[in-house]
Image (cartoon, rainbow, N blue to C red):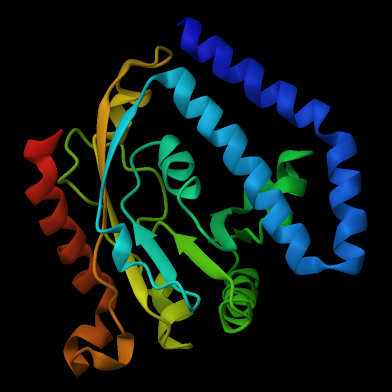
Length: 246
């Protein structure tokens, strides 16, 4: 319970105390948008690393060398915990925007930081707005900004890491329309940090594996047509392999 309180204090404290920093970042963005993006990324990564330190989580990372360093990619992963975002965002080397629920755009200060980080707000209930968000994501990838999306569409509350929700095929248009590499991320045991014993936080061990990139144009016609199903199977296989490491 103490860890939960400390994390809440850290998040709220950062959002309030960072108001002047947001102003500085806004001014920086007027002169150098790229520098603003990198600056915001490093600031938020620092806060996320501090929060992870509070939780006491230990992390085994596999295959990080698989992430291309010279081009934008589409990261996709299974999603069982709020901490999936912190665990993966702290490892982003370059500009990376995450796809979030549209409701998060209404949260003051948090949404400002998310925009600085090139995050996209996806309204799954409004097809027209959803398409506009996807098109924005495609343009970001073309401009060299990676995007991360959780294709299950929501946090999976199942009992087992191996029970994946269906991957939404539309999530992969960001890759199929740009032919950028898709980097699958398999996250084991992240729900044990917080969700399994809410509101307590536990010191646990999690495993993150970055699978080898998948190029959409190199897939068979069938796999490309049902790319969500293909990627779901790949992540499921990786999760099963790493289950014994937790």
